Amino acid sequence: MPGFYLPSENEFDPSTDDFILKSVSKERKYKHFDLPLPDDQREKTLDFGSEIKPHRFLPLLGFNDVTRRLVRVKDDAGNWLRDGDGEFVRKEKVKTRPIRFAGHEDAAYLQGYAAHLNGFYESALASDGSSGSVLAYRKGGGTNIHHAKSLFDEIVDRQDCSVFAMDISGFFDCLDHKLLRDEIAGLLGVSRLDSHHGRVWQNITKYSWVETDDLDKLLGRRRNGHGRVCSPQDFVAHVQGRKNGLIRRYELDYGIPQGTPVSGLYANVYLRSFDREMIALCSKYGGSYRRYSDDIAVVLPLGAKASHVVAVVEKMLADFGLAMSVEKTETADFSGGRLISAKPIQYLGFTFDGHRTLIRSSSIDAYLRKMRRGIHAKLVAAKSKEVPSFQVYEREMRSRYTHAGKRRNFIRYAHKAAEIMGSREIKQQVKNHVTWFDRAWRDEVNRVYGGLVTGDP
Image (cartoon, rainbow, N blue to C red; front, side, top):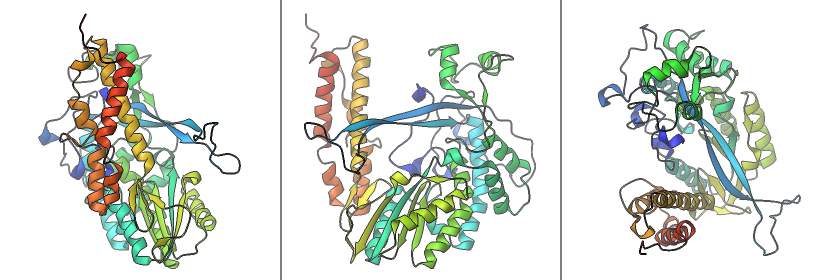
């Protein structure tokens, strides 16, 4: 299972992603081919401005993160389909995201390098005035909550405007290697990438990796690597292997791995020219532009045609080898600060209708599904060990899925969003979460155990 290897992360607050910059990095305790580093060695202080001994990279570890969700289905006329009982017809949608993450020494090196390159990037943003438009993967930039609020505040300030929220399709998977190289070189003011810059670019674009499933099949799930995913002996004999090793090599001319400390910064640098072009275009028409990773928001004077805006952005993205997820495009019109179109604007997990800010309903649905799956998995594990249902502790699950406990979770995220957004409606959305948990616990006990099992003969 992927979780055996990966560090824990808070999926509801992108600003705390473990794979961005040292300023927001967390303790890395995940298993890899090398051992976790002591705290005082996790942040490399190398002089990346001079030539030193070349860093040797281990293969990345990789797996496919698969998410499944039920989505409503429309007919050819664009209307929602319903079954005989009047319920929405839904189909399962599967999304597979390849994850590749670096070893501990490599992560520390890449994190230090990212901090070095980020200095050039931040200076460039400050010099051309584009800093306020590039939101993700930056130190002190705030969370997705702050950036969604900024957009909604602008709508209130403008009163009359048209808003467009667009999504770049397969962002990291489609970055053209040569364009990335040229953008990095332009940022550095050089004609070619040498030294650290060349080695990092080469190892991120033409990386090698090992699938965790391959390790499990060859060496077994219960192997003892003494803090590693496998012993050094197994790494040499089986992972590297002279004939049938497990190391795979990425040979395409586009795409970078999601999961390294430099990935987010590379993605931002890649779109540096695009961002400047979009800022200039929107400013020309009295509007604004912002981008949070692959989520784009454009605000223009009221009356801008959605078809025209989408077509222009599509063309500009195509110049950088990227495509737009047209089906995910959201548009909304506001007059006097009031929504005058059919649906509120959606951005970064929130909806806004000119007055109310809410968490997107699909996010709450996802939370409920994950809660049920988590409870189910715990009960199945308990039953396999012949633990009666009444002896299964709820405390850990309550800490994970309710306001109880100190760990970050969706409910705490919702309360944080309500506070930042000044939205009582968000708290109302999740006020029954304890009831939801209790119901899910009872349902899963019945499903797994067939009812309350007391253990009495």
